[in-house]
Image 1: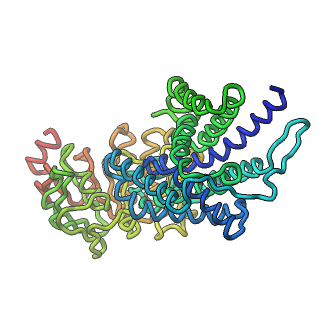
Image 2 (image 1 turned 90 degrees about the vertical axis):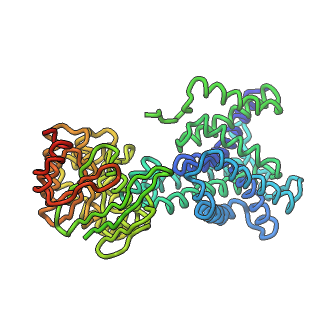
Image 3 (image 1 turned 60 degrees about the horizontal axis):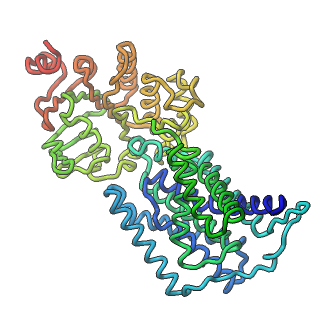
Length: 290
Length: 234
């Protein structure tokens, strides 16, 4: 194992991790504001991968260009889903919310199986094998583009929450839902916007992921679990934490498959999850309960 | 201006309010007094659209607002300074205030109103960029009042505005309410501080176990033996 190879794998893990982080960011935003755990998160991400695959195959749209319309489509799906169905479950016990979203996840996976079958779908990109050379270190172009896309979308989301009045209002809802109702904020609309933004992250991440991985329906539950792991490691409800968690998991899995064995990489990420839960139950960037 | 007619409210299986009728005429301060758990906050929240009443009507400016959502009620000019202040702890003082002006009726004038609030509460201007959670209790109460005024309300319901404040600050808060009222704001005042609120108000209602037990002009209530015994410790 050479140093160049190690660095290559580390960079690969870091770039993958940023894309995973964007997906997890959506989960974190939804939970942090609406207080609903989206058990169908990975399913939506894989659905977005299939959408990007279809856009590439039938409309000849490059995934990096299809990203914006797919994110917009998933925003609408999220908005409508929250407004019509999830809103009715907001005040219900947690387990009823879980059943609703797990049920939705099962439906999505089986629709994907029905439409596309169990086989992996591959998007052919003319630049799929392009790479940058940093001395002896080789970095895939698609991964660099995907990570750059993830960072751009995440930065746009940060800016929205920081600088727009609607973004601040969503943070106000997360901070104190009673206070939000007291000052006359339209909490139901803000929740729907938030769910829309969370799924837009899924949509964008799915369009990016299709350039570095091939979607299969069975990938979906694995992605849901991955998003949970990332968000818990990064800190539930913390937006930078989701990206950091994504990078930590990406790098850890890449290192594990190099040093131990590719089949052992999940063991490393879940091991990391256990260690974090023991040492820092609120995650790397989670806020304290007070 | 505000009229509540025979309002019933349930929290799950528990009855919170039964047949409550109150009236707050334009330009007056009306007090609602009662012990802890008598249903004062439930009444305020029902009027604000945060709880759905089981029966009865709520009229504000002759509009039937029964069953309206809280954002619509607020947009009609019915503001609330809630119990426990309910500021947004991780938002700056400025953002807290701006959130008060998100309702369509006041959104366009939010910058002018922010300046007006900073002129009225200079302490808040000093704390402009500070997170609301780091303010003292008194400052948070000022912030809650200013945030409510950002929506340019015509009637404000104050729920226990002096709770947890030092005696000097209590006087200051009551003074602010008196000043706002002189400037034309109609006030519905819920207070544990019965003597002070009766002195401030023109009329008052006594709420006991979710029922209006007594009502009348504040001066009459202050002279009433039952009120004196139960709430003034005399």
